[in-house]
Length: 116
Image 1 (tube, rainbow, N blue to C red):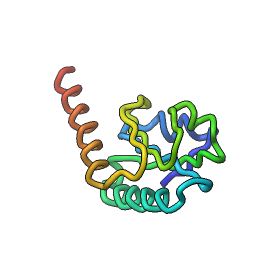
Image 2 (tube, rainbow, N blue to C red):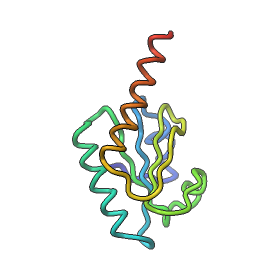
Image 3 (tube, helix red, strand yellow):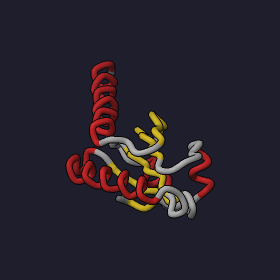
């Protein structure tokens, strides 16, 4: 998982050509839920390898970036594609739900390529 700061946000979150999962975590809130979500995302990152990029943003250290995405609680997960917001989920999201969302983003890509 790539740690996100305001310095690397553009390159790491908005720049990739693969879907990005941006995980918002806090050291000051429900630590157990954040750890649980982080473990799920680490498994997904290993499983999907380079077909998805997984990033983590500490909202305590980067509050302005969190506010840009309307994050009011942690854990929260945002799905991005080509630098554009696609979907947001609050709380712990299951591995199955995350994989379904990635599949949807990938399916949309295939549709876009067919239409070109």
